[in-house]
Length: 203
Image (tube, rainbow, N blue to C red; front, side, top):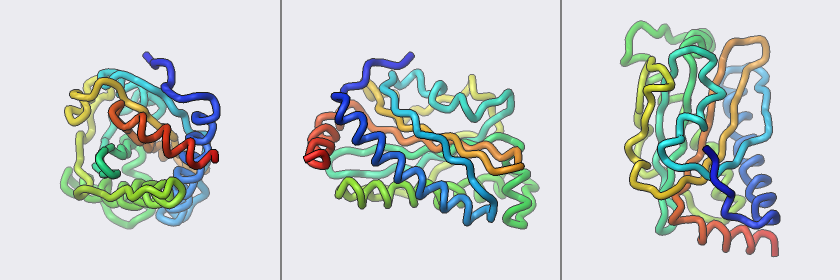
């Protein structure tokens, strides 16, 4: 269940615009990675409890098992995560695009982390440029789950947070079954800093 956003209407609009541009840049990287046109919906920004994270990935479910990789990043005194989630049928598309046959979980994990490096890193770099805040990947992408039902998914790294600002976008490739969610997660403890930076952008 979504909580009321902790931003003014102007702050929300500014955040929406910044996230939209950053996630659009990630979509362009995905299009180059797959050499296929990517459909780009408008990102959804919500304020949720950590236990409701599955709802942020619901667009990728479609009754299939999902796989998720997480990229931790740091920003000043705060940290966050970029999650990339794909469906089982998306692995078949990725295999076709890259020429890498997914024969076992090791190959699947490598392909998924390469996908994350392509879109999550692009998104964070563009977001960092626009917000004028360094968002540095803290470590290599980590596979959270492979081939699991979404209702069994949990992400222990954020369970200690009081609330989460999530920015969610679902990517589809034209005429392909590929289905991918990119979700940015920011802790409640960083909200005041986000509001100050949004006010600076508005000024």
